[in-house]
Every structure is written in C-alpha cells, then in structure tokens.
Length: 180
Image (cartoon, rainbow, N blue to C red; front, side, top):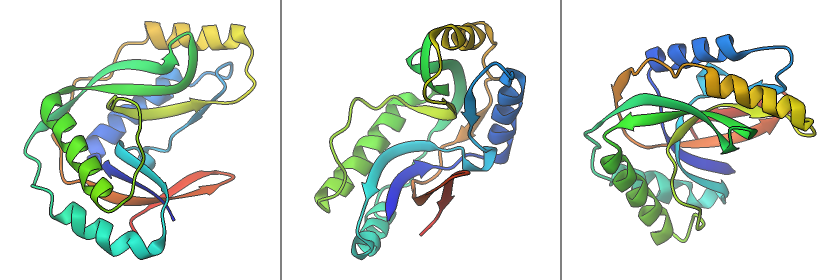
C-alpha cells in the first residue's frame, strides 16, 4: 500500500484553489493540474507500506492530541524554483509553528512503528499541479513568469483538523486517494 498522512481541506479552500488553477490554465503551460478533490496538505509520505502496519498506524494517529490551530492560504510558488518549476503550489500562512509541531509528532509516531523515512525540511504547501516531463526551457520560463505575476489566492483560513491516513493508487489518469 502506498500511504501518506495529510490534513484534509474544506470545500471553500478547494474551491478557491480550483479558481486559481483555472486562471492559470493556458494551452502553452504543460501542467497536470491536481483535481480539487485530491488537494490536501501532506504531513508525511510513507510510501510502500505493508498492510499489516495499517492498524498500528491508525492507532498511532488517533493517539495524537487534537490539533487546535488555524491555517490560511498564502503565497503562490513552485519547487524547486519558480523559473524551473516541477511542482506548482499554494503556500500557507497562519499558525505555522503548531503545524510544524504536528508534523514532527506525526513523524515521531510513525518512526516509533519503524515506518517513514528521513525527509528534507518540512515545507508546508498544497500542490496545485505538476509540470510534465521533457518541457523546453522557454516554456518553463513562461510558466514561471505566469506563476510569479499571478496574484496569490485569497487569504482564506480554516481550522487544521486531525491528520488522516490516505492510500495513493497511481493510475494513467492520475493518483486516486482513498482512506484505507
């Protein structure tokens, strides 16, 4: 099972991000946009995980304290860089210190189960789209210019909610996310 742990998003946030995607959709931009129903805030990607670990994972997540903080939509950007975009994202603002603490708690809980892997520094974001492979530099720069010039999403806020375990199934049409 290909698993990850994330915070779900309210419908109003998904709708705002879908409007942002629609405004950025140009035929010249080679982007595979994330379906609004698949948008989330990843706390930890676990990757391939044996089904036998599922019960322990769910129990560990239930034992985490209930988060009590608000998040807000922030900037617009891209990884690794706006002029060499591979992933287009919406950043977050609001109570980020508790978000980082929650993410560290999730990683500690999965590490105690012998799961998860060391990852780069947590950079909270919501993925909006992924740039297709093999795109020439001029098209990447044009996309980067669009990202840089585009206004950020409205600064809507929402309560964080509880971390949720998701299964990711890769298909030719894109990933399907379900709750195992």
